[in-house]
Image (cartoon, rainbow, N blue to C red):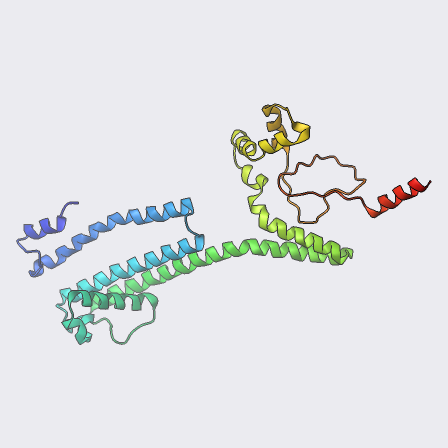
Length: 301
């Protein structure tokens, strides 16, 4: 970048130390460097788009960064005001002897402390404004701090509410199930099975095939389903030797279902209109007690 500050100081006949009072205000040229901050906003947008970290962590990191930058900028302005007054008793810096006798870095950290005191709204009897310029600036800074605090609280609240929304939906489903079971006088065992399936649905619904793939065009959706299930269907006895195009159509019309362990999928004697293909897991077949007794009676006859 161009050394605009040095060029401006040399143009008015000053030096790099800014000992000349007319060169003091040329230090404000450094604020042009704030244009580079667009890279920070781009970095946060990239992290949000790529989802490299959690939403809560990203929100805390973003708000903390904004908070620090605002406090730093305002501390620089406080430092500039005190420097323009020569760090005398006519400025806020003159109220503390350590500020007058401190090194530049010490003065900066005291300015940063004063900036955070105003930004957080806690207040401090050690530092306070001494002239009209400082009073006007503090008023504007207080307005900025109110807006910034509202932004931070709003951002964190939005993230927390979004995370709690899923749990709220699950609680509503459980409450509806409890009311239904009580009204219909369902057995406790049957209500417990329905409750377990609700829990399974709560943990797997967000990654179901229908929920994820319905947003995409048919060609892309077909490629994903082919990658997931084509080899499984080819190993299935009813579909051995079938062409890939036919299997693609079958897979696209299929529906993925997840069952809890030891859950009955099909009962003996049911009229089944669906073909079940096991993608993962183990299925056991067992005869019911009634059918076994009927077979024994038929054998005796």
